[in-house]
Amino acid sequence: MSEFESMKLKPELILALKKVNFSEPTDVQREAIPVVLSGKDVVVRAKTGTGKTGAFLIPITQMVQRNENNAALIITPTRELALQVASVAEDIAGQVGLAIATVYGGASMNVQIRSLRSGVNIIVGTPGRLIDLMKQGELKTDKIRILVLDEADTMFDMGFIDDIKYIISKLPKNKQMMLFSATMPKPIVHIAQGYMKEPVYLSIGKEEEITVSTIKHYYVIEGGRRKFSTLLAYINEYKPTKAIIFTETQRAADALYELLKQNNFDATLMHGGLSQARREYSLSDFRKGTQFLIATNVAARGLDITDVSDIINFDTSEDPAVYVHRVGRSARMGAEGRAFSIFSPRDRYMVSEIENSANVKMNKLELNLEPYKEAENFVERPQSYRNFGGPRRNQHSSYGSGRFHGGSSNGPTNDYSPRRHGQSENRFGKRPGNRNFDYRRRSFR
Image 1 (tube, rainbow, N blue to C red):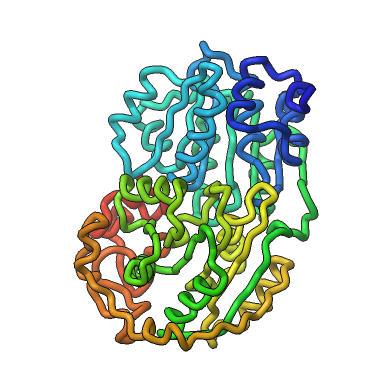
Image 2 (cartoon, helix red, strand yellow; image 1 turned 135 degrees about the horizontal axis):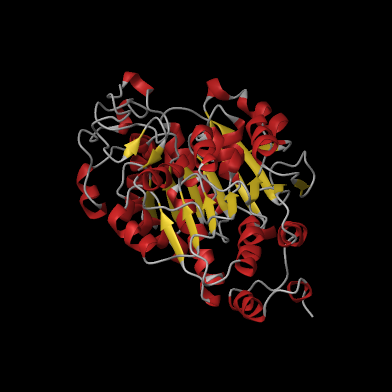
């Protein structure tokens, strides 16, 4: 008898778990599922990549009946994570006859409304679109008896705490709440104290281990155009099988996509300046075998891609928490992984900041850049974007001419920074360059 069977899960759920290769529970599933099935509220702290999605979807599937409409609501910080959670829900809950609706900004609201009107058991969504549908009367909340806040620390980092409080205020008081997070900042504690009924606190793994121990951390100190040759030197020497390359801005991501294409590497691109359809296509492409995904922080938020060997921080953030979120995309479910970061000379202090904050050891690499010096003269060719959905206005610049981190007068330069480079918002909290993005909520409507 497997451990899942010993939890007395219904036979069709056991069969569904076998189909998706859930043979034995992970530590977080082993601890959380029995508590959730007992009907108690639960607050779970567990590192990224430990199986938290299954820890709430498995008991939800066990507890929700087919004739229950809008029984469970799962809130995620980003639309990519919403789609990912919904996909796992289809694999597990969908196999036992439960219906799932996914609601998020950047996609047709009419399609989502039709899905809700048809009757669903589980709703997965982002805060902004959920509130829109609630205010329109299309999302009925009076029957919701299970609420999950997934990646709660990320949700609050992105400024969603007021939205979360609003959504909770519209739900029945007699509900079961689950809160899953990699860290436990004060806003999470306040939510637990203010809205949950005597929650059970579960801390999986050593609290001081913010990242999984199977990730090896490496760095170099290089700046300016030498970052291009550094990137190529690392790729050619360490030969990552599947890697996510993170940049701070959309423009930088565009440039690296062009650089890798020019050097005959298999790459795809994902950031907030692309349409939702293009982002979904890129993510699907990467899952199916594309070697490199070049992305801004939009891809650091909870994506579960099991075979990522390397995380490459082409641009590093001044926030150690961003480093933790990024490297969490590697070494999923016990696998080994590498994290490689390029720090500019002025940001070298971040090495010790990350070591102290994330409790990891950063190892300095010595790379031979000479064979790749030509990359330092790299110039973006705008015409190549015609094969990737078309260029954005006024984004055609020479990254080899010293304007690599420059901002454009049209559209955001960073997915979550509405006021960078002096750009202003209009009275609706949006900039004209991106009508789908609500910069006050930091979500796609």
